[in-house]
Structure formats: C-alpha cells, structure tokens
Length: 323
Image (tube, rainbow, N blue to C red; front, top):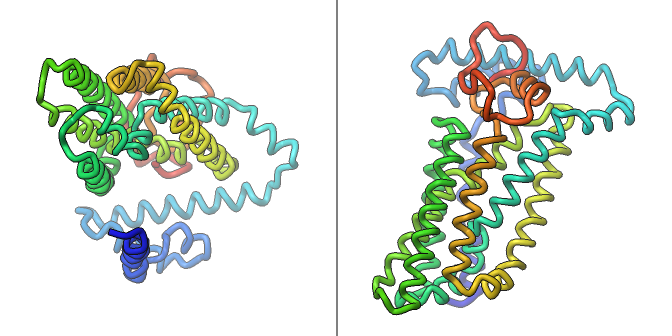
C-alpha cells in the first residue's frame, strides 16, 4: 500500500467524528455559563438517559453546575494581581500534584509503552521471533484501539488508583516474562517464539487501561480551577519532553543493557517503580470533590497512610461537584 493511500485513509476516518458531532448536545457547563438552564437540563437528560433516577440525577448535576458557575463569577470579580496569581504556584495545591504527575509521566515513558508503539517493527525483529514483525505491529495498534474504547467504560466505572495499579502490575509481569522468553529464544533453549509476541500484546493491553491514559485524566482533576489551564499545559509539555527523551534513549539503552531481553527487563523494572510511586503518592480523585482533593494536598504529602481514602461525596456536601 503506497503512502498516499495510507494518508487518504487517515484523513477519511476523521469524517466519522465530524458526522457524530452533529448528534451531540451542547456542553451543559457552557450552557449554564450562558444562562441557558433549560437547554442545559435537556442536555443532561440526553447524557444521562439510561440513569435509573433520571430526574433526580439531572437536577443534582444542574444545581452543581450552577453553583460552580456562581463560584467562578465570584472569583472573576475578585481579580488577583500578578503577584497573587504567581503565589498560587508556590502553594502545595500546585507543586505537590505537579511533582506527582511529572513523576508518573517520567516513569510512564520509561516503561516502554510509547517506545514500543513507535519502534514495534524493530522491537519484534530484535526479539528473534519467526512471526511477521509488521503483522505484529498491526496487532499492537489494533489492541490499543480496542482498549481505548473499552477504557471509556473502565474510567467511568472504576476508581483511578485501582486502574493504574492493575495496569502497572500487568505491564511488569508481561514485560518480565517476555524478556525471559526472549532470552531463551536467543540462547536457543526454546522455540516458542509466539509467546513473547503474545506477552507484548498483553503488555499493551494492560498499559492502555491505565498507564497510557489515566495520568492525563487525573492531571485535569488535581489542580485548582484558577491555575488548572496553565498547570495542565505544563504537564503536557513535560510529557512531550519525556516522550522525546525516552525515544532517544531506546538504542543507547538497548546496547547498554545487552540487547532486547535486557531492555525488556528494564521496562518491567520501571513498571514496578511506577506501581510503587502511584501506590505511595497519588490520591484518589474519582467521585471526590475538588475541595477534598485540595484539602488532601494541604495536609498530606503521601497517600499511603491517609485515612478514608476512597468514597463518593455525600449529598449534603457543598461546593464543587464530584469529579
């Protein structure tokens, strides 16, 4: 298939979201911000159409959005000076979540999850498998696409920490076993060349349900509203820098660690490191209010010994709506 055909295919699939966007309602927060509460209510009814207590759910969410909008108006009326705004970046509600997310993203890149996607053909050739490396590369991308769809349900249903921890454990086990079988293949003690390929596919599957996507979701939930936009931009910048660093380090690490098996052991070890880091430092955000998350960073530096770690907000809570 020529590169021109591939380019046209990548353009054509963009037509799908373009068509679907016409069937989507306007964003309820935006409608509330414009004073269109009736349309916001209808939009919420469409979004929660399968909820068992639809009317109660819609009214609760609408009230939360209105309260959040009023809080934003109050904050905008109390304009901060540049000095006061900069001081917010010196508070623990900024630097603690920023350092945590940067740490996760740095380890994320050196688990090899993105490196393998960019270098999958070379990686499978280095394993020593007799399977077609190009076909294996297509399988990797297919697994990623399928898991990206499934992950929308996972992130709506499960808390963030269990997803990330499960993802890291699965990645560590799969990459460790893949490295072991790669070593045996290269030593000639086994001819089961399909096993490392299967393990790498499982590794991508586990990565897709947590380590690849959830850190960026959590990054949008941890920061105060006043600095969230800039903070998230800094996180994305750091992620791009670390992606570049990890890609550039692939071949030096390959030679320094003695080949493909050593590199896979390294990726497995980093997966264990990100597991420990998440378990110790990252707080739960799913169904927690922004106020609760900010209070955590004011009073805690780790999550390991915190009491009342998970649980949705109660109906009587005031302030920001649950994330």
